[in-house]
Length: 346
Ligand SMILES: [Zn+2]
Image (cartoon, rainbow, N blue to C red; front, top):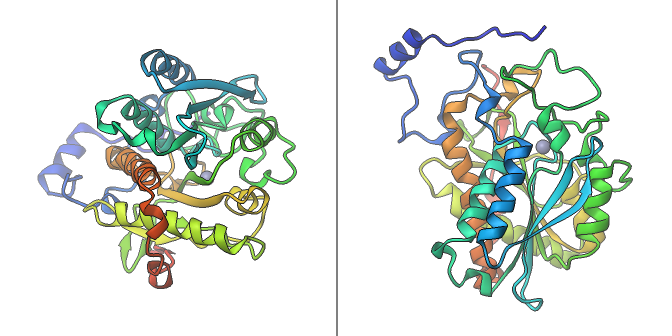
């Protein structure tokens, strides 16, 4: 049986708002309410696989420069989608990857919103200077809870749960060298092995209680940390990080820490940088959509700002590559950016 432990009552919500404890538009997203067992986490607000596919097809019909490709299938037979804006082969190319971990959902929501933006006048001219590839939701089975193992102890309520793993209970972001899973194999064979990619941002979600300098973070970032990465790839990765840090940390709702990540090349941030010479950045957004470990799950009241954080990240990267300003990005902030640390009191 699924646990439904924490249901916020309307009266409770009103009391919180009157006491000024509720979420306010002015507060940093990092300081928005955590889950903390105080509200119902309902997965019905998230875009389902079927909704995502229908959205992508509609955008392809509407957008002149957008092309949709199916590059493989998941364990359970769901098509894996690549969204392409390839205007000029001489331009640099950036690849965005979301939801390798199925329960890290809001980056996909942000990516879909960004795809919509790319079809509007707001992005006029930007596509002349950059090629964009987007893989939204590499793990559609985990995101739909359609997996070969039980999710009974997961926190979220709704018609399904979301899990980190693919249907075979494998962590796709530890499968980038062996590629034993169809999702990672297709991603390498039919995306990384086919397209000439210069930059990649791998978008994830982390737990909800990390802080930098005493303030909860809205996310964290890191470049490749394997000793085998080429110096120029590392430099470009740090420049990509600089563009994102400047775009996010200056916002009232943005506060980024340095992610404390390992050097294993089974992880995309490291392995892809070494194997393909692609400059990579890991972006870890605060809080997950579902988990069996409650402190990882974030209340939904910050969703709007977190989705905006993804859109801002993608927009900033694309513009800095399109106008080549990324090549002059000052990477010195990395020397002083503090690692985030866990807040122990919660
Ligand atoms: Zn992840």
